[in-house]
Image 1 (cartoon, rainbow, N blue to C red):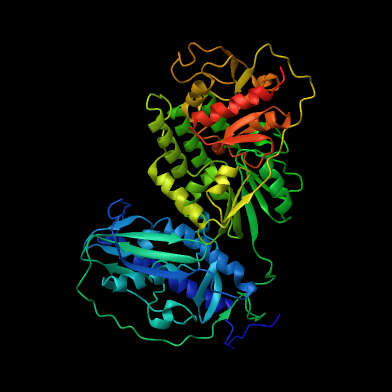
Image 2: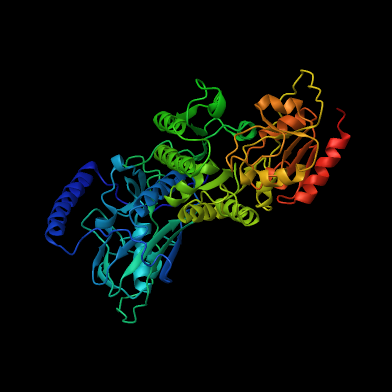
Length: 581
């Protein structure tokens, strides 16, 4: 590999670095005292005000600007630092006349706070420094402040100009804790939004009006400088030089929750030796149920033991259905996502995320600067709730179709994250159909065939493999079987009206009922885990299911539209006529 061009400069000695550190400390102490005595320097609170207002100024800058692979680890460190910094900035409201101070808002960049080594310009070189790279954020804030015609109270230009940066057009603002600050003031209230996607940092100011008064600021063009980097300059005599820089920097992290065998097969086919796996409980010790992930051969495995134990305890105290259970599920998903976020490292450049964690990781800014795929286990929240609303219109008497809706903030966060996802991975055909251009449709893992002989029934047995709730199509089943000489086997509790099945021949049963059924019927409006349908199909038992069940890619299953009683009854009669009793 060719060496990057660099400028010959005097190599800074350890003594010179110590002198710089001493001077900086004195200046930091003085600024710290000044800030404490100045009541106008304060940290601004978050507020939903102006969240839906127009953007009066926007600055968009690229994250991955360095092409030399030896610099990649410092750029990734910068992006990690930006993730932490914008978490203190996004959603902040600044009142009219108040001063915005970069360092007062962001706080000191410490390793204990999660900051890592990023790039910082010092003495004409790019050096690795904890918290380095935040100048991209201060540059963007300064650029947006100029565009909004805000008053610039304090700003310092960089000593060197990096090609492609805002410094080339005089819109840069260097910062160094805490005495080199960026400060500006607005005559109107405004709100700051700070976001990152995989490629860009975006800073936007939102307000109910614009500032017409123009504060004259010099906007000069500056020529880019040739700046040495400690990762590539080769100055072996410099004590700041970075050694052993790998050009293979970066890896994939798998953020998993509930075990799905289809996802296990996908991961086994894509996971590399250096990749990381984050799971609720280590599969080496808990190889069953929801925690059956196979970690054999995984060199980097992290578990969230405490969060998982709390979730298990809380779920045992709740009923199997209802809004309270759904609220608890969301709360524990959030806690697991937060646990995983704390474990993510700067070199986790690509993530494969199970869907229930996605909305929280996106909302809290942990996916910025990263690419990611999503392991989809359910319909997107907005699509799911839309289908439930349509079902509720068909059955306004239902006591379950309107009992829970997720918070709109979470729905919006998930929708935005899914829009930026690289690919959508799922075995569920209905979920995949929502993302026709990005879906990776996996094969369902079919259950083992039951070898015991099937029970001979005196009359047809129609198996309803779900609880009696509106979203599973219980109203459609009831109307479709009305008048038929058949027994209805229920594989779940009746949660709708207790007299829902009055006048019908019904009997409760466990999972074994599938093997003795004449036909299995599930015309659901929502069904994300059609394992019982797969069991029936694997054992050559006729299955009638709606397209919402996601098994359109499974041989031997008759697919009907959700909510269509006539199609369901016709398919049911046809299946029963073909079954030999």
